[in-house]
Image (cartoon, rainbow, N blue to C red; front, side, top):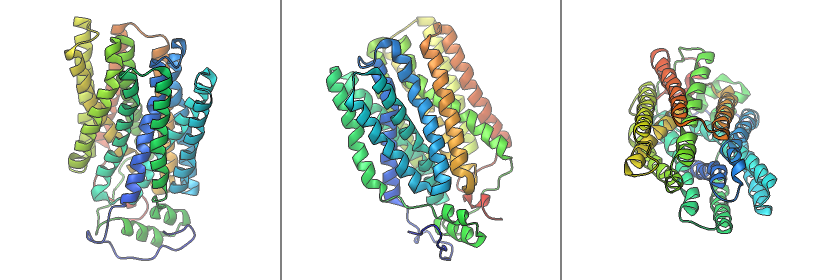
Length: 430
């Protein structure tokens, strides 16, 4: 593995036979996303169980995400200054502290809140090094596939976390189950960490030698891969990915956790996250393996957010007409909603690291993700602390989703394509 301060050896453009996917890195990042999904659901599942008093449930639905935004910022600053791998390791270490705090005082509200903050910061903070490592270590031909599939492990974590609640374990049994679900993937993740190598493009860019930068990207790509040509300014890119990210995260949190908990019967509330996590996992594998690198990123964004708006409108109309709180039709619509929820997640996972140059990629991704998670946390906190009337709440969420569609259409019209193209275009002249 190359070290910072050493010159990157000059190598010819790689051939398809000469380049292999960094499988150990991919496995390690996938395990990290599994922990991400488990830890992300940690607050909501405690909010809907008997572990956290009901009057504090809004904290479980929001505090981990606000803390996660701070974790993203910290991770990004470390990633651009000390390296992607170091950021990955340092932020992940916070998970251990959060787990220990929870296990030490599982009945103390303040200890639970502290663990929300620590685990939220660590788990959500891992997004930044995960996204940047993939974008700089995987050839453009497969980059979209890996970006989606690795992120998809988070969906399995969501489903795993809600299973003990659904099968009716006692509070004590649930605490033990959640602790095991956090610790077991953590062990596997730590083992995998040692397979994550430092990004060669980051090493070269941090030294500032143009020949080394060109050479580093050649060692990543296959043959003469077409370079990305940015045709819009950083401010526009930042705004689009920020809006897309906020809407996608609000959609994920509200659909997965809040809407069933606040408006539907208890039997539905704990079942929806399990169905959702498994549905998104299946959709994510199909989208990531078969579709991600075969369609335009711009078109994928427009279709995903358009489908999200359309299916939410169907749910809104159905509930308004029937006032249903359970039943197969309601579950069917909720299940269908997880398809665009996953597609928008996949689109966001691909675009976020692909819109910024290597020198500032960690920082820019972290600022975007910080603002996304904090905004999501505050929005969900406001809506879950004092739940709005049914028709108004569904209408408000529809308006938020519509903003995402508008942003996707704006990128369709005025953005540029990044799919299948080398991100070296940001760092070296064409």
